[in-house]
Amino acid sequence: MAVERFAVTIIGAGVVGLAVAARLAPRFGGELLLVERCGKFGRETSSRNSEVVHAGIYYPRNSLKARLCVAGRRRLKELCRGRGIGWRQLGKLIVAVEEDEEEELSRLLESGSENGVEGLRLLGADAVGRLEPAVRARGALFSPATAIIDSHGLMSFFLYQVREAGAVVAFNSTVEQVAAAGDGFSLRCRTGDGEFTFFSRQVVNAAGHGAAELSRKLGLPTPRVYPARGCYFSCRGRSPVARLIYPVPPARGRGLGIHATLDLGGRLRFGPDLEYVERADDFRVPEGLREKFARAVARYLPAVTADRLDPDMAGVRPRLQGPEDDFRDFLVRAESAAGFPGFINLLGIESPGLTAAPALADMVAGFFS
Ligand SMILES: Cc1cc2nc3c(=O)[nH]c(=O)nc-3n(C[C@H](O)[C@H](O)[C@H](O)COP(=O)(O)OP(=O)(O)OC[C@H]3O[C@@H](n4cnc5c(N)ncnc54)[C@H](O)[C@@H]3O)c2cc1C
Image (tube, rainbow, N blue to C red; front, side):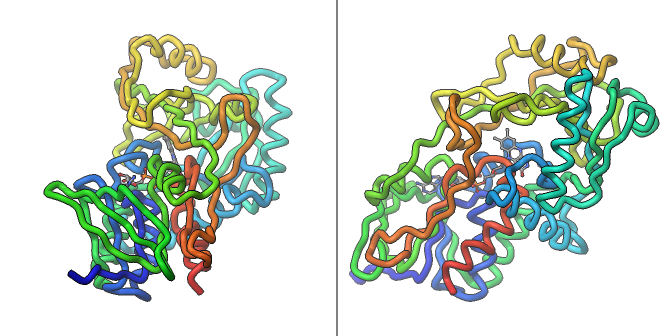
């Protein structure tokens, strides 16, 4: 039997794989295959996050995280407009509670401005009080560009574009093997009722937590990816805030600090924290975290007490930055596995990966021109 051939295979139907597929499908049509191990799109990290469209404040200048976050946010705003994808530009306050945190706000203002974030401004305690009376702070950095998005609606839209362009989508199909073969790659997939093997001239590895293993199977030098869990607690009752409220971030890449996020339904949640775990599917929210969350939140929202917090959900980041490491960027690389750079690796796509997805897709498309 002849082996089926594709021009491009995209592994993983999370928000990144879907964005890439939507970007490339008009060009490759039925010669593009999107393959996903779950029965539906976005079942892993892409459905376990804060759904915040970040402005791009924190990341080092010229890093991929900074550039793709800023570009991705602009693209998402355009994309959501008029297409019925939920989007609200709530804005965000990064608040300084202690005196020594005020200096950090100026540093963040500088870093955000260098990254091209629009509208950032420092606010004194009175201005913070006028905007958000429930917040206790000595001052804040206000980011009016920060938004929230319906990530599920976004992914549905990308999938619609992929199908409209006639590309092939295979769910319940796990890529188990990938090897260089002639002028491309041979891939073997396991499905519910057997397996199939096919050839693809180029491959985009957007497999999230599964990406490093696939990269190693091809014999590529692959950095370690650490699973880092982030837990959320939901807040009972009406939200005391109308904007996203973040503390000044803790030092050395320990996440953004336990912050207050709102979803499109107005529900308030706190999190995520950051804890390195053994497994990428460890979604437990330990009850014991309640006091830690209550203490962290009470610093800037004194009205929120432990009895208003309920364990909610957790997501796990695929991080290139280990517990003792400094900042690590996204890794996006066209690898020369078959004698030509036909295998495009996307590794360590943690936050702001949702925001950056359309810009990551543009970057990947650049490898095809
Ligand atoms: C707690 C938390 C909060 C976050 N908050 C935000 C936020 O507010 N804003 C933001 O911009 N970003 C945020 N992020 C980051 C964002 O969620 C991710 O960067 C993004 O979802 C990554 O998408 P992805 O498509 O790369 O990965 P995934 O969504 O994990 O998709 C990868 C897909 O590949 C599939 N797959 C894996 N292996 C195989 C295989 N061998 N064969 C076939 N399919 C395979 C998986 O089933 C999965 O569907 C957050 C992340 C976490 C964990």
